Amino acid sequence: MKLLAVSTLAIVTSVGLAYSFPDCVDGPLNSTTVCDTSKDPATRARALIEMLTDEELIQNTDNGSDGVPRLGLPSYQWWSEALARL
Image (cartoon, rainbow, N blue to C red; front, side, top):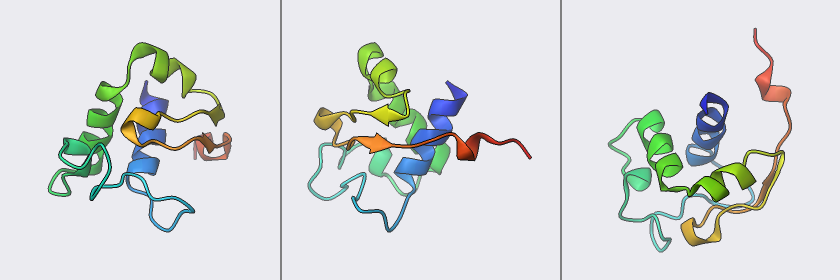
């Protein structure tokens, strides 16, 4: 769960990627805690994780994830390079 929170946090707070997530203007999360910039990133990431169904959570814990269209979460491909512990 901690790994998913860190991964989600990276997505929620990412800037300059080929896609923009979350779409806090027209997207399905625009009136949720995920788009509340007065909240810290960890709170926003937890809010997103809590919106996922168990099935969506499981489907998006692999390195090739389908995303969650109902939440505007795009499909993504990630590897384990960021998992190295310093």
